[in-house]
Image (tube, helix red, strand yellow):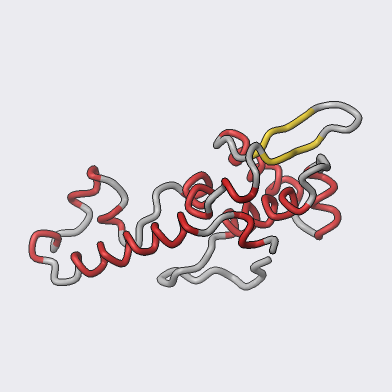
Length: 144
């Protein structure tokens, strides 16, 4: 888990993405078992309330499902091979964008220099390559 303080201005996983990826990895390693958020938090020294918040986001995004009852807990909705890193990060953080200008068409006014920007084409290529790489890596990549 990422224990250092996040610094802005560099490409780092947020705490939300870090916890989400960790939670999914735990569930992927125990595919036949249901795990409670409380048990995962206790076993790994994590904040229960924050991990529970992450689980709700992942559940709403369709990546995990909750089962109630004595043997209840959370489980993956798909096999680890079918869950891409891109899907995980977009579920937790929103669209992948190396710069605000690539967030959506609505951000066409994100920068006063957009019309004559010298680096936008290069950044756009990097952004597309990053998305393709994240799409090519599945959750299984983290459990092998």
